[in-house]
Image 1 (spheres, rainbow, N blue to C red):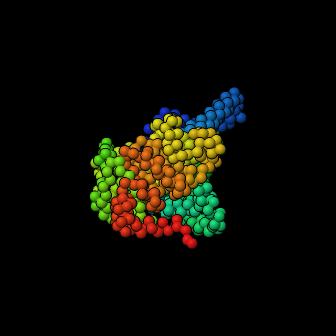
Image 2 (cartoon, rainbow, N blue to C red):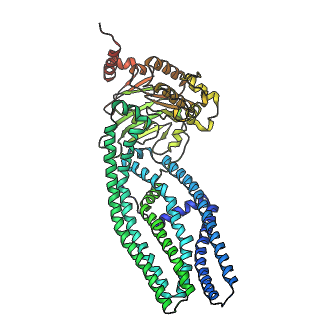
Length: 596
């Protein structure tokens, strides 16, 4: 397995910064300026406090009039109000930026996932990468703004305070640095701990989320309750959660040790400043006003240092590994293939094709040679695990053969982009999607740019004999196909008809139906296939089916056994051969014979 590149912290920040600037530059600039003003304002507040205390002491000794103190008090009040307004405005801008950027990054992740080779979704390691990328995306915006806040708020404030303290007493500025520099450095070691945690926890987390879904998701709920296996999945969930928590607790334990050392150093720096303050006043190195200003601000300074260490640097160190996974996912290579027009009149040819799934030892298909001519209807039959679905994905250009070549419409699937083949093909797989959308959307989504044509939608549904009655579809085409969203729930057979309608709605020259009628009764299936044969006239079609009676309508039947093509021909020809097809057909025929 190829090792992922380890991106440095600053390279990650640079990449995220570019994403932000491209997404909403004006919003970001305004936010940064507000944050900077806020940081400087806190520093000015400390300086103004010194002047206020100095004037107060002089007023007590009748050296200056009371109005000076009143004016300064008003200025301090106005400054505090200004700081609060800036804080509220910064929070408002931050929340809006977060929403905009998360939307933009979600789009980038989904766009990237769509561009990846579909075979990657067959690999556990690649699924973990996608899972980690989504988690990293959630934290990437917060990490970036934690880093930006250091430069727009904390550094301007610290620079102002460093200059101010250095002018008062150089030792104060050194103690100020001592408060946060060691803790900042220790965060690097914390980041290593949590980066390793993410690598270890991703597969366990995915396992835990799956078991949890088996207990609560609507897709599994009925069967889980019917079989009474809630306790079984509850036990699996608990074990996965315990394993996940154990990994997290170990990381937290190691992190806490580092945190203790850092907090001890910071506290020592805090005490050191207090000692220097008292010493400086007693030796008349600083005035009462300066002492009061620094003393009044020391809590704020300590709070801001805690904020930058725990919330900013701490958050970054804990989640840097997640964001690194997100960036690595965006950097995953995408196949660069040319797009060319595919002429399906040239048919489909497989030349010595063999295919093996990633990390698998056995081939899913071996030495497949096949020639499908334009307009031909092919039935693909075979026992479970013989490689039928895998072959359909090769013919659609979704997968590339491990050995040999698949030529679709005169173009090699290894050389031409999947989009080129997708433009001319359609498919309905046995594990089709049940979108919780309207009926119109469920059908038209296969050609969403032309989804608004009610006549085309009705035509596709009519071809598969969907019931349009008010009882079944109270809002006609606008009926939502999910009771979860105040719509209706369809039966398995009804859903299969909708899925087939979706497949034929899309303009195509080649269509694959992979076990599309398993939930439809044999009578309806026969009628559906007869209609489909009429619909597919002049187009190439591939039917994958277990019901061999339905295969009789095909121009040619391909028989797969043990990952190889063992027979091909019409129903009559294959029955005469008395081979694998005849054996399977006769076994199925026995189910329909009645005994005396």
